[in-house]
Length: 422
Image (tube, rainbow, N blue to C red; front, side, top):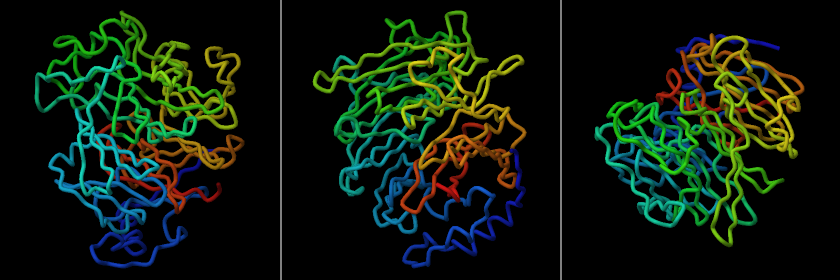
């Protein structure tokens, strides 16, 4: 099933202004617009965020945002922003997460911070390597391109693991902001301490040469003792059935080896030690060049952004986790035909997106309201060439949040999606 809906951008903004105008205005008190007042497809309502701070993350009724020189915290899904803190590097924020205990973890390109008091104060967080030593970012050749050390592509980054909320994520880097080493990070104490769970090897194709994505010359970055290389991490996800984490990486086939890997990791809380194994490595034109990892009912779900010569091994797949390395045991649920590596599953709804630069869709969404039994695709053309990434779980009013990236990685707007079922 493929459907498209065209909407004029000016018309959309006039609708949202009429229904949601003034939601953020300081001191204003507006009635909440019902979902039915927003533009919609057959499967979901959608809206841009209201005027105000860039909403970078959400959890339940809370939202974290930023604007020039200030970070903000809302307790009513972004209508008002009573908590704010001066932060000169606000527009350099590449990651944020609201933890269950209320702590807000946010990061610029090379530094992590945590606030445990609703942004009254914040503290820098020292990162430690797997051995417990302090981990320091490299000195960049170009101060304007220090590297995206902490920027993820996924929007679900914490889970309750044996009674403790763990924050675990990997950096999507070596595209913008300068070259960076590729790491999986974790915290078990509310963001007060961040450590490296896994460090990838030194990729000679993404050295710090002073450019936005690195290159074949310059400073090598990463773990010199690890032969496993990649360009960046697409997704890290926890499977409670196995009590294990899965991570997938990109991007290319290099003379030194493939960059597309799936890793499985287990964490020993008593010893504070990780055990990681590469489950499978695949070529760039395979289902293993992917992202959007999810687990539901003990099954593993993911979406592939394979690219290269035809035929493309793409689609949204499902399998038992133990069968990941065996393509014959995979079920192809839906093939959107174009590249996608962002997907979220919640309350029986599967929501994924197209990459604007690799698809004829301008702002494309893929949705199943029934765990893959039926599917639809929509192109919200009025927003221009946008790639929805970093899907946050639904807030207390049922809205998913996503970054709209200009092209495929540059930050543009924030969109909210509310399924009509689920």
